[in-house]
Image (cartoon, rainbow, N blue to C red; front, side, top):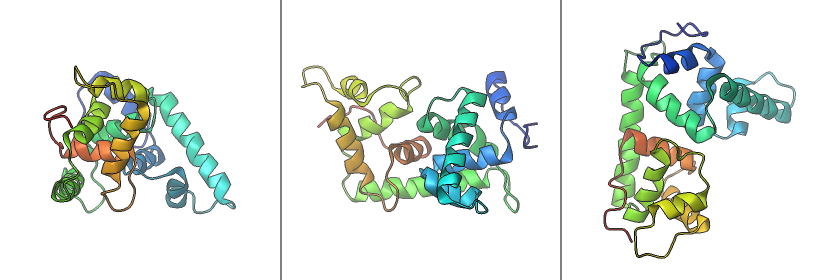
Length: 200
C-alpha cells in the first residue's frame, strides 16, 4: 500500500518502495507532469487556495523536488515515464474500471500518432530523436550527446541545436503543449516507429 493508500500492483521491490513513498498529491503532480503540463498549470490544479500565483508555482516546484528526493527520479522526463510505466497501469479513479485510464491515455496517444503520420511529420530522424529519450540512462544526457547517439555512421554529427529542432518540429504538429516530455509519453504509449530506419 502506498502512502496515499493506493494499492500497488507492481512486482519490482525497488519500484514498490518508490511508489509507497508517494502521496495522493504526489501522484497528481506526476500525472500532470506526464501530460506535459507546466508548473504554472499544475499549480492551478493543485493549489487553488494559494494567495499568490508565484507561491503556488513555488509550491509545485518544491513538491517536484520532494518527489525526486523520495524516488530518486532525476527530471521531468524520468518522472513522466515512471508514471506511465508504473503508476498509470494501476490507476483506477472513482468511476473507472481497472486499466480504463491507461486505455484512454493509449487511445489518445494513438490518435496523436495517427495525426503525426497524416501530417507527414514522422520523419525517421524525428522518430529517432523521440525514441532516444525513452531509453534507460538517456533522460539526463545533454541534447548534444543525444544528437551524437542518433547520428548514423558516415553522417555529420548532429548538434544539440539540431536535436532540439527535430523535437520542436515534431511537437509543433500537435495541438496544445509540445514538450519533449509529452512526445516521449506519446511514444511510450503508441510507438512512433524504428529509431534510425531510413535516417534523413
